[in-house]
Length: 282
Image (cartoon, rainbow, N blue to C red; front, side):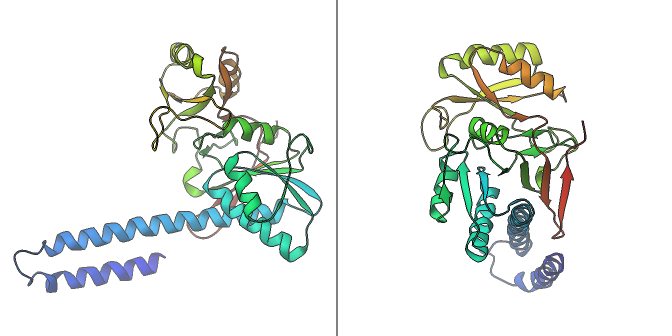
């Protein structure tokens, strides 16, 4: 990828003088060159991130899923690659796998790939759950819920013997807040969003906003018919204590802080490798 990018940039630079002879009505050649370079860079970055997601997902499925298991299927863009690989292994290896979804999206993915669908009523204990994350710190504390599925994701993860995270290199941080700047998602009962927002801001500082929908008027509504608050904290906290304290506020359903839950995380890296981080021994 890096070599191709260098060759491309050299060609653009070499072509710039020739473009300067065009009519005065045409955009300046230097502007065209910069525009093409920017578009190429953006496209390359997106492709690299997607390939990294795929590498992490495939590695996690290959190393953590075995025959005759019940598997929790997370939500988000990275989990799409995990379900692709899971379905591929089921077909090739004739695996007997049952899947429990964490969201409407996960349920549709399971059905679209022809995998066996179940729920926590029939399978209350899962062998492994695989999910993405918005950010992962050095101790495998997670921020999740950017897609609004945090409550069901946490329920499935909490009932799994092994909880595995898959992500690309952009989600890897030493401390929460380094990469993810949108805050900690908090699912709340609709009637309580104002008082909950006030309590969190007063007790923990920062800014609390009701998440608004993009393609509809009004706020985002979760699969559980609740609202989501995004708390933009000001500094690193004792996340275990904060998580417990926020959950005790009347009206809070769940937080997007996943503390001491993940066993390992797989990060697809820019160089095509996969970095595995295990949770610290407590």
